[in-house]
Length: 314
Image (cartoon, rainbow, N blue to C red; front, side, top):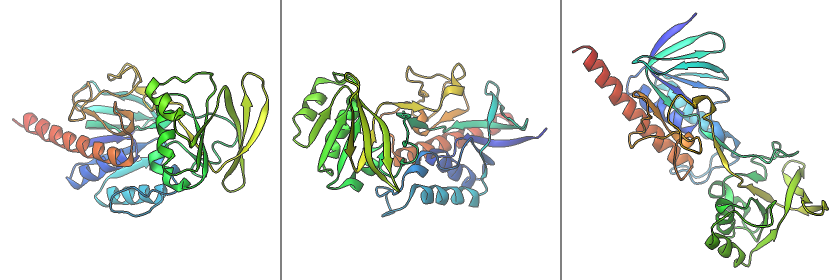
């Protein structure tokens, strides 16, 4: 049974986790990144990123690989496609166990487990993610210049993003499964007063269709069960967001949305345990904000480790 010690274990290999790995390992901290899926997180689903400062255009997959290479070049160890089966964060030395019975211990831990947009879970959705289906208007809106798009959802995010997308799209059709919106009145009025926005109420998309990219959707009316087909260039889905924190319930302090609560130094409710990126309590979720979170969490972890070492040798 392996039991190797690190200064910091970063759990999650998206932009926040990789940035933390870069800063930690460049500061000569022995660092391990553990990632349960493919390194890169949600950004690998993005076909093209055009709002990352200093880079005109790059695919999410390429950007993730650059970050990964940077972290490894500074000495960071990265293990992907693993499964974490147990954690002990209570003592000065933290421990993480994998399904192959390997155990890794560290003086500090950074959770950068990210999150995921809620899916419709209908046929074609997985196939067309990043190929006509998006969950981020800020990321992908300008790719639909003068196109016809759909926004799915009826909350504040859906209506606000629909209005935002009218800067690019020719028409925006909001498809909502209920008769009324679950949003603030001002958001509803702003959407209803926008001449580019149309509404299909009491309806839901039941299938996405296309060849290499999304071409049309099948819509079902929830009241009459009537089925209709709509040619479309893109669909933006805003039906909620889920942080990947299921395994942390009862371990660290979460809010009512299951987001990790952190202080200004990105420290959680447990000393020596930090968090960054889309899994924390925050308003905006962008690659740039995740990178900033990862930077601060790493610097805070470095300070914590250095102080701990001084105290232990005092």
